[in-house]
Image (cartoon, rainbow, N blue to C red; front, top):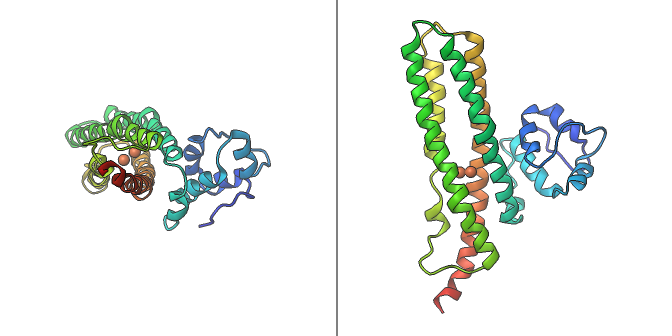
Length: 236
Ligand SMILES: [Fe+2]
Ligand SMILES: [Fe+2]
């Protein structure tokens, strides 16, 4: 896959991979790019072009993960981006998945029990994911912002590794849900509705995977390094 550079047209990003659109939107950038380059539009929107490219390229190519470069950006920049992503999940991606599922349920006949199981599995998954996002938004991110602003550890303060909830659980549950559908759903549903639902799950899984990768490999690492730097001052 192509790795994008500042001189590339912003339109070429979307032409190459339309799944990047929601990622681009999280930076406050919307369609109507004309012939402008990534650099031009980032300047207009006051977005750091290097940060923008590091994120966009991470989503473009599974093998591309500029860990060192990402570690060099401020965690506050990362948190802004991650929070926008949470809002996208809560306000759009999950409601969309739910709408598609309701659509399948509304149009199925005697097949109801099998889909009912899938629906209840999805509800459990959603509850768990929402809790995870809430924990990050309300506990973990505010802790990081405060730590970077005050550069002080409070006595008895939990460390970031204690704060961070495992991503494996939510990732595994989503994969189980997909497998449940692919392997065990009973016939009797509307194919087009079901395909649309499954595709939405695949797209969501990919987005969530990259999101968790940025949190685990970048944000948590940055904060742990700062905590270690600050520790000796606390002992004195
Ligand atoms: Fe998150
Ligand atoms: Fe997370």
